[in-house]
Image (tube, rainbow, N blue to C red):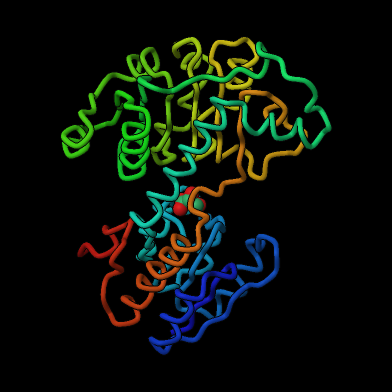
Amino acid sequence: MNVFITRVIPESGLRLLEAAGLKIKQWTQQRNMTREELIAECQWADALLSAGQRLDRDFLEASAHLKVIALHSVGYDNVAIETATRLKIPVGNTPGVLSGATADTAFLLMMAAARNAFYMNRKIINGEWDFFEPTANLGKELNGCTLGVFGLGKIGTEMAKRCAGAFGMKIIYHNRSRNEEAENLLDAELVSFEELLAQSDVLTVHTALTAETEGKFNRTAFKQMKPGSIFINTARGSIHNEADLMEALESKTIWGAGLDVTNPEPMHPDNRLLFMPNVAVLPHIGSATEGTRNAMARLAAENIIAVSKGEKPPFLVNPEVYKEG
Ligand code: DGY
């Protein structure tokens, strides 16, 4: 099988593909491919390993010969999954392996927002570290606070473990269905969305982007959040409304925010959020550790290798592809 890869990916994935006897071609330019370039490159390919590339309906229809698409991500909101399923193209992702690293990033953002850390660092760079003021630069302490998790799955559970362990935080969560394992492990309590907003001192988002979650954190939601609370999003930027978040921060409806994801990405360097004291923004680096990125590359390769052997990808997001009829 011929495999086209849309970015330079970690060695561990490449080695697995090569060891399985597959032919590889990688896009090495430091920019996203256009849809037309991707369609042209995929003419040669039987399998596509896609990192960060949008795979829309037009691309999929022009590439219906693909036997498998392996994503180098757990999220698959940038793929027209229904079209892939209709065309009988299995799509694989990389669940589980990035939960710890992403939760670390959420925890870092929570701490940075609570202590104005990124803003304070910029003050040093700007030559504004002058005299000691006992009443200035005051942050928030998190000991004994309540953590509200919107989407208590694998990543949310890892974040909750860190917050319970470090600060004895009480854990509440809002999910479509109960997570009994996490309830037993963390004494977590399932609450309504309104209760989550009203009770969380830190509200952290760990859900997939779907039609249901898109824009969920809007003006109405921010207004119901606990005064003095911190909003964290390491999932997808479209889950919060950026203008509404800015308004909530500027009117001090909420205290701070930590974002690893924005809408659009990249965020414009003049964005007001970057200059607010209680806001910490990172450029979507949730899974960016050497170990995690290598593990993701391996899972993506395994999804392709399975199909090359006539098997189902082990991490499949559209199992309907294999249903008869
Ligand atoms: C994921 O795996 O979905 C991360 O957000 C990286 O895109």
